[in-house]
Image 1 (cartoon, helix red, strand yellow):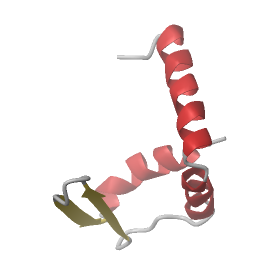
Image 2 (cartoon, helix red, strand yellow; image 1 turned 135 degrees about the vertical axis):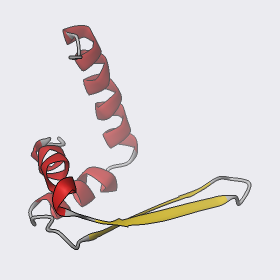
Image 3 (cartoon, rainbow, N blue to C red; image 1 turned 180 degrees about the horizontal axis):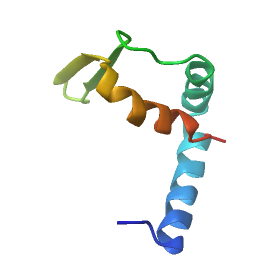
Image 4 (spheres, rainbow, N blue to C red; image 1 turned 30 degrees about the horizontal axis):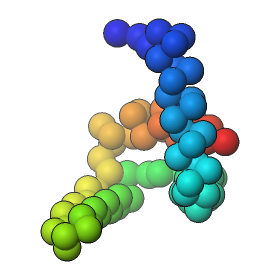
Length: 78
């Protein structure tokens, strides 16, 4: 299942607006993509809602995860 050109343009516009509103996030992505993610790397994600509810998780990268992560690293944020 591929993305249609219109969908890609919509995503590009949404990404551009997101980057304008959150300029440190693309800088973070650029910083981490300069270094290779290897097996054993730990990725942590947390989310906190305005009401104080929190969720957090992490994962330890396996050899099987590397293909997906390398593909994601190739996506160049602007």
